[in-house]
Amino acid sequence: MINTVLTRFKLNGKEVEVDAKPNEVLLDTLRLRLDVKSVKRGCERGECGSCTILLNGEPVTSCLVLTPQVEGADIVTVEGLESDPKFVELVENFVKEGAIQCGFCTPGFLLTAYAAVTKGKVKTPEDIRKHLEGNLCRCTGYVKIIDAVARTTLKPA
Image 1 (cartoon, rainbow, N blue to C red):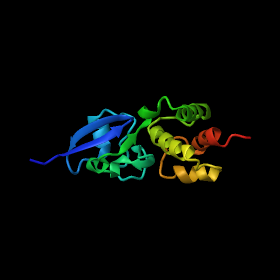
Image 2 (image 1 turned 135 degrees about the horizontal axis):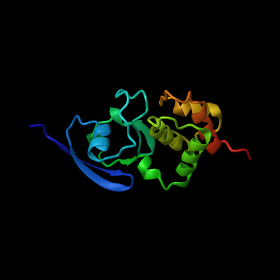
Image 3 (image 1 turned 30 degrees about the vertical axis):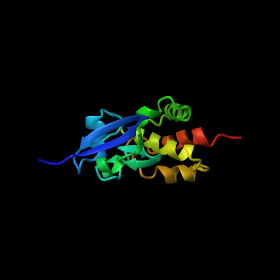
Image 4 (image 1 turned 60 degrees about the horizontal axis):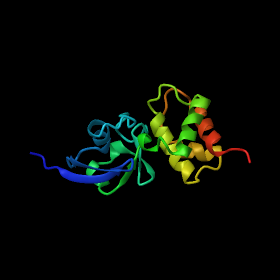
């Protein structure tokens, strides 16, 4: 029998606890056990960004984090930001700019962009490119995604 580790953390503002195997990946815990559908399984190597979450405010690929490692952490997914005005604006700009096509990569891009925008790290289009470089998209060619983030952050004075 494999021992489990009782792990407590905050998920989208709510306290949760799970009995996780020591080698259980956070992506599996969120998606399969806690029914968080915005977290997607992509490359499983931390290269595509489809499983991005905010871990204590920082974008992290959940496929590279073991569930027991998040003891006491604050985890936010797209579902936890649905009423945040800046997040809503970002989503609206993704729609306006046509930055959402198949939608598979969109949650990861949104969370990564949201973290950069809310921390004031986006001042130029190059900043946007830099902060989004860990997220891959096969549909849009990135221009529309960059335009959507720019529309949210680089508004003319």
